[in-house]
Image (cartoon, rainbow, N blue to C red):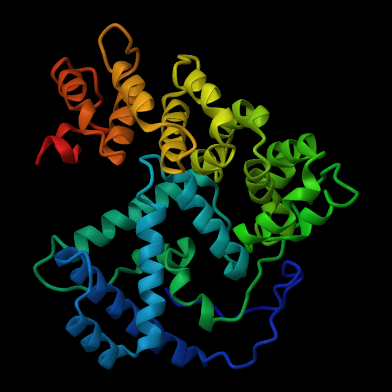
Amino acid sequence: MSPRRPHSKTNPAPRGIGQSRTDYPSPEERLRIIARRDTLSKDLIGLFVQDTELSESKTSQLTAKYGIKELVHITKILQSQFTSRGQFIVDEPNIYRHYRLGFARFGGTRRFLSQPEQAELTLENAKSYIKRELKSLIRMKPSKREVELKELLMLDWEYWDDITPLDIPPRPANVPAPASRCASAPVADILTWGWHLDPQRITREHAAWKSRLPDLEHIIFDESLRNGWPGEPASWAPWHALHLLGALRAAGSARKLVELHKLPNDWLSDLLPQVWAQMGASVEPVLWDILDDPACAPDQRGFAASGLQRLIENKSIPRLPVIHNLAERLSPGRTDNAIVNAYIVFVLNRLDAVESSDAIRAAFKNKLVDTKTMDEKSVSFLNG
């Protein structure tokens, strides 16, 4: 997709994110760079499929063809995509957040899509791409509809964000402005941080929020902020507030946060395992409570299991007791939901929990695991 020419903007960029650059390439040159980056991306993906690491000779060949700067740039994008979309089975919130980020910076006059619309059109685009690339014997150009979808969805904005001027979409007249009660510092300040989602900023500034935990919860669940216009800095305050709760080890907020996954246009709930893990060992009982609560949706319970995984990886809690307790929940006397069991198996696989092999095999044998979510062949330590 080629980025549009920027129009005159009425919305300011987030504080500290100006547009002082004047050395952007021309639209024609930008298209040429994007085409080369698309080819480089396909070359890298092809090599990654063959080998987990690039050999020195292959790196040298790509460097000679594309230049070291472009090779590093595209490699970082691909690594980020593989990492962020391989952490958990439920990735719709992450995909929608990626769309919101691109729209906030380059949306221009495009129509803004709700999460259901974005998901439906992304699926349509994927089917069109597969049909054209994999099922056709003759290499065909994208159809007019496919070009329209790529333009609307902005799927590849990371490939040209560094060579394209901002095109911040103005808030339509029929979209209300944020109506948050936040008025004084530091609460009002967070409304200006905008789309620059910087974990280091959270580390630097979290101490000022120790006495403001209720305000952070309010920001996260404030519908006018969370569903606010992406081009306005205030709409990104819930992301910052959520990570501040993690940095502050606010385990008392952990249970309430699971409600994020029930809300429309969800672009935050996939972050819950990471945020809970930041809270440390004190959040562990809350996660077991969520995991065992049949009133919670399977995805919510799966997030809790993933949170336990993150706590182990952070060395906040001991590994073996958690693995034992997760495996025990796969037994016929304990299980109550096949999808939740699939998430538990997914987490045990991520932890390389070989000691749970017998419990996992028995769960699949007894048809206690939803195989559409996680099948037995996907468990690496069961298959050599």
